[in-house]
Length: 295
Image (cartoon, rainbow, N blue to C red; front, top):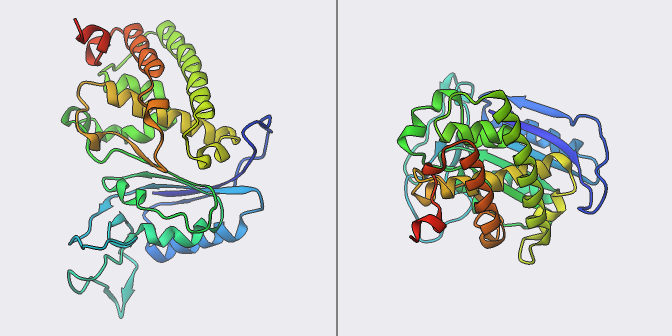
């Protein structure tokens, strides 16, 4: 699935202004030509002082070979639909191993659209292909990338949907999911939601006060919706890092540009908040607690 939204940029210190719902394109299993047509239309329609949000959720496409020099078409990407990409009635196939996968949205395919502010979310088994970006035109550019590997117990719940996207949509529901909680009492749920609002305020301050964070994050922080996505992304990253089942680095989200970990996803204050939330839900044994592990 691919979704594109148009948002208006504000400075981080500006008071968020109410705006109309952004223009959206929602594409389900598009071919590359369909996808590129709508990307181009969105780019053309983008008003001044706006940002294009692209959400990609698709199967990962991996490179057949690794080269000494790797460019933006050598890391694979996400799969596009092949059903309608035909020549003379027959589906076009890759001819040999040396050629690139044609039914794939490569990172390099998005380079032309970085002439304007671009915010990308990739939920895929090859999401990390999109951290190999080069900001050629100096415009704000951020990519939020899903984990590429999940613990088996989490994979078994995949029919419920993607864990990464769930964290961006409903963080408490996603947190409950990785803790194996199928239900939470209403009163406890409301207390936890109120606590999360405090956590999110603190994450917002971590981002804006960091001296080493890339300016692209701050340039998008003025938009209420994009700010919420960034905050939830940091919460997701921190929660998975503390969870005992998530042991591989590939099980953690990544971003382009990279976030300063000590100021955000590995912040001691944020780790303390996550342990407090786990204690509130009585699942603290599932998380690493340095204060306890040292005894």
